[in-house]
Image 1 (cartoon, rainbow, N blue to C red):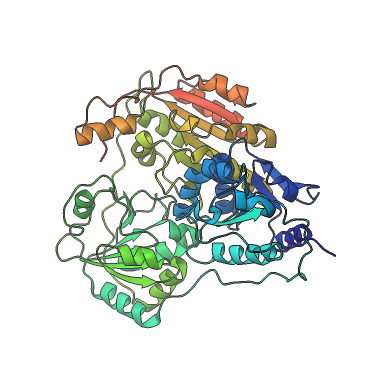
Image 2: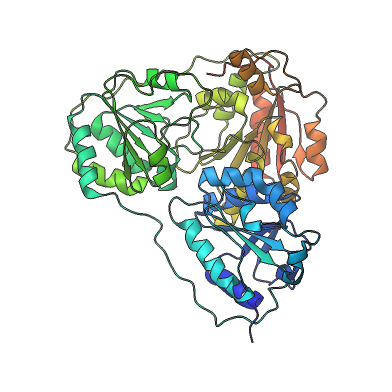
Amino acid sequence: MATVRDTTYDLLRDLGMTTVFGNPGSTEEPFLAAFPDDFHYVLALQEASAVGIADGYAQVTGRPAHVNLHTAPGTGNAMGNLVTAWHNRAPLIVTAGQQTREMLLIEPRLASRRAAELPQPYVKWSHEPSRPQDVPAALMRAYATAVQPPAGPVFLSLPLDDWDQPADPYRPPRTVSTRFAPDPHRLGEFAAVLATSRTPALVLGAAVDRADAWPAAVALAERLGAPVWAAPAPERAPFPEDHPHFQGVLPFAIAPLAEKLRGQDAVLVVGAPVFRYYPHVPGDHLPEGVQLLHVTDDPDEAARAPVGDSLLGDAGLTLAELLDLLPPESRPPPPVRPAPPPPEHGSPLSADALFAALDRYWPGDGVLVQESPSNLSALRRRLRITRPASYFTMASGGLGYGLPAAVGMALAQRDTGRNRPVVAVIGDGSFHYSVQALWTAAQLRLPLVVVVPVNQHYATLKAFANFKDTPGVPGLDLPGLDVVAVARGYGCAAATVETPEQLGAALADGLRADRPTVLPVPIRSEVPALL
């Protein structure tokens, strides 16, 4: 008779989930025992890295990824990147071991008290099966929940003595829809507003990229003659940034954002919240006379929007159907966004000079993963994203995601055969949050290049302190970090880069290598403006 473990592995095979990301603990070993030859276990040295790697892998493949965590302590370690996976809409199946059922009543060592509550509210569904035979069915429900919109992580707590129990008869996997079309009547109302608008504008979010909807977004912008902004703090790029209609990324504070939209009479927001704000700069959410239309696949996102009328629907399907409803227009295109002035050169490099050099040597099909908050404005000024699925960062604002996510994305590029080069830009502060992910990249022999702007402080926090007039905050300087020594200790190639020409040569060498390359770049330590 088949065991629960046999049946669960059969279901994972049928679901195409034969890669497992994790860091094994004693409560997981009964599940991992005699690990099947047709499965691949990706070992991370800490659970936060395991979740970040799986998140990056899922975003590139477009399929759920399985993360296997230790019981309560391991799940606790993973929570920071689980929060990010929730905001990133990454479909993760997170399983964690639990102590044996026979001892749960007395709460033995490594028991997870109220295990299903531990990861909430940052999972779509959380469950500990009532009996061993329910494990495969619970996994199927977890999968169906994770992939349906809005996609996101789910969590299962699985007692260690369940795996050798006899299983119920095997049930083949079910399928569920992962996209839904908008209400036609409501969409017609939106189309009527846009058709009669004198000065419409588009604000696009990450869901446009997730839906492979760049062509529809471009066609709609050109049909309307509308300027296009990326929504504040986007985790993915929703529009080609070399397109003449693209105006940049909206600021993430109420009053400055509204000022950017002045002069428009209708604003269509697709695939983003309305809006991500931080810090608090009070003011009207919109200029007077602006009508906001919001398209999202998340009912919660629609409900909490402070202004505007919302429509539920997949970003790509809605853009395509909206395009069919709008008549051809003869509006002139918006003014082209001016190019930034040439950066100042010197030693050390400014952030602008570093990213201008990165843009000069950027591989045409490169994928950028960024987690350098204090340098983000300079990076987005100098390196424009021109292809879909080419820009990734954390939607949560929490650090420690970018480095492991880049590892997962580089692995997914290899596993899918796409083989697009992956380059991560990780600040020297962010670098050390999940630095152990470098070891996984080295063991997998991934040609990942990590560029580390080194300014030796938490510059974003200093910018926030200046903005909020909170002087004397401790712990904002980072002296004595040897990025090269740390990277080499994990098995990576590493060298300090000080000039644009050195960056170009090192980047080319790193992308041809059979292991990760870490390139710290000393930059000026000035504190940027927060907004």
